[in-house]
Picture (cartoon, rainbow, N blue to C red):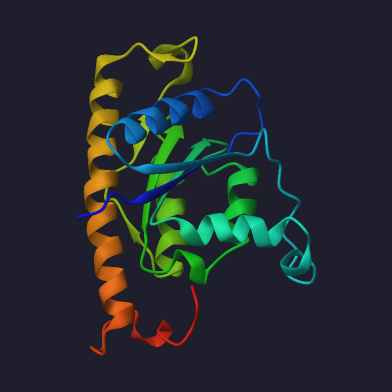
Length: 198
């Protein structure tokens, strides 16, 4: 089975972001295991506020859409802001819908309070867009679990190892089934999208 194409989104607007640091570490592990990786760091690639009247024709939209469409898996990393995802993360997610259909979502949350509602909000977005979501999130406390861009907590290191494995395995399984569903004639939930180019 081929390795999935994984898009990692760092949803912190800070250039000194533990979320971004952790996602870069995850990206390196995924690449070492054979996955294709694309990292979008919203601190480095800020995205204008989504506007349904103008965003689809804006110059930045088509290249970004191509990157989103290419992905089989979305790993969304965000700080916990008042019990939900960052505004930069939500703004990115708002730009797309059908591009997420039938693909896998996973979540990494920087939080001092477990990040449970943040992960639930991202799973809700995935569900509303007919995507699958891993049943767990990886959460971490920035100053306790990370130092100078490195993981210093063994429990977090173990969770990341599990996440990397699950992104590759379940991402590949869903990507393969998604291709079969689009090419086939059976009445699965992706059948309604067969005539559309996603």
